Image 1 (spheres, rainbow, N blue to C red):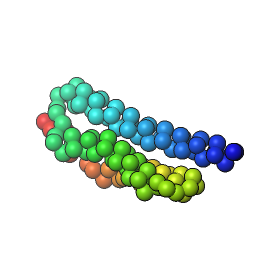
Image 2 (image 1 turned 90 degrees about the vertical axis):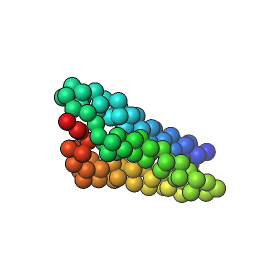
Image 3 (image 1 turned 45 degrees about the vertical axis):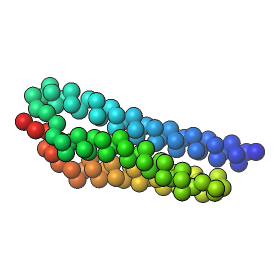
Image 4 (image 1 turned 180 degrees about the horizontal axis):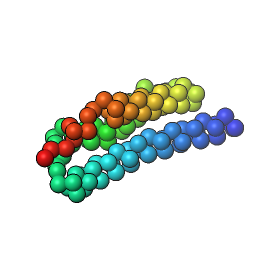
Length: 107
């Protein structure tokens, strides 16, 4: 019984972290255009593409992790979900550091 509680708690926490990445990406998608407008510039199509990518990536990876982990025990399922979350975090950090900020804005 305790093992099931731990597995469910871990699953809920990992799902909450996926949800947090989606909420943060939606926040970026709504607030970055406002910031650009305040600065007197607009967003480029490439910038919009990166913003949409930031919202879609955690959703797609979470779905794929659930698909891969189906019919497995609680331990492997949690590990697959955690690995997917690590992938999302790594890709988001790469986008943050490798994509120049100038590609988001157009005069």
